[in-house]
Length: 220
Ligand code: C5P
Image (cartoon, rainbow, N blue to C red; front, top):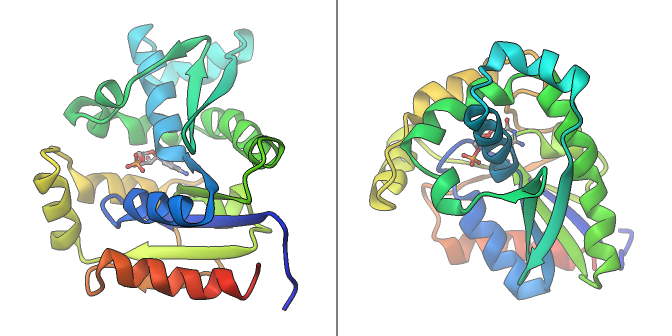
């Protein structure tokens, strides 16, 4: 097995599958940089909503207007600024954004804007001296980082995932989002080829992390 100095890991899964918790635990353990691409889609959606631009009109907007995407590091996570604006997690993770985000995320022009930015974050983490990157989302192993050193797909039954959202105090129509995310034409939610698939509904966070750690040990 080839050994790497800087490891790239894709972490895909539906809403509530445990991506953020797992990514943060792995990043703390291995000094990796964390990229939460769900926040990218949420931030762009809010950017357009604040301008009263409905999803249908986004392609036209992007044809004529440049949207500047820049990054700032906070501990081991990347903060995205859209045209210089940073949206807090409270602004992005709420019932309204849970309802809206998938309609913006299925627009090909939005995805290609973020694709370029997200791929650039691999070098960003390397240049900052991290020993790897873990990027979570829906299309990371399939589209954004198809050559990731390790691909992980997390899944759990819908009632388990819904329960996690409720215990976080979040109202989230998970099954509706799952449906839009997995049936869209461009970069749908899927288990990427070559990914290790983990059912987080039957394992503790520690068990999930140690399973992934075993795979990381064989790479580094
Ligand atoms: O992960 P999170 O629930 O914050 O993602 C919000 C939404 O962003 C998803 O429901 C999906 O519509 C979109 N998304 C995506 N591709 C990604 C990450 C998120 O389409 N890589």
